[in-house]
Image (cartoon, rainbow, N blue to C red; front, side, top):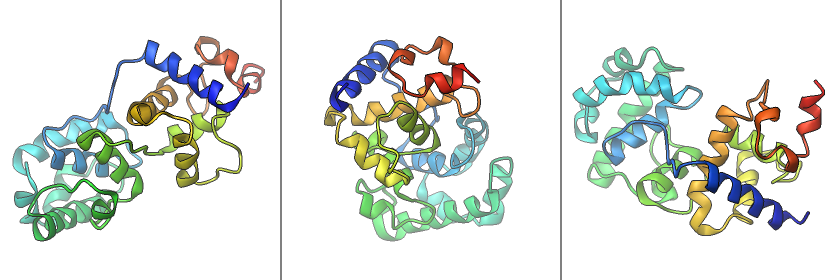
Length: 215
């Protein structure tokens, strides 16, 4: 099967079976989205959605959070992964937004990645969700599923190389949705340790299925 044909079949399956979900994080503004995505690094969306309501109630925008201290923010987010670093990042990015962007979340990769705690993956999520750009964030789920399904070659060993390989075959209008389809497939079906191959609608296309069905 040619690579584009494989992509077409995978994307058609996802489009038919999944909602047009953008993110499972709860937020009320672009600033809150950015904060939630920074917090979600190596942590579940469910956990983030448990801590952000109180955080956003007291610090709803960049201006208010820029006036806080990392020690104060830490108390709101101490149950998430790496709370010390994330508290520093949140205050730093809020201050950066106020100082350099008038408190408004910028829309470009270059601008977003000038903010503390904002790398390419976070910036791509914000671009896709907040600004509806054809940006594709590669997290552990996207990285794993892309390799298991044979969407990307084995030589793609970095998130950036996977991003570029996927965008080569995903139509621009489906890039943002495609990211979440692959992510959610990895989160709920093609899990790291025990993928649900027997219940997967893509099993017949998957070159990795025998490895897990025989294990």
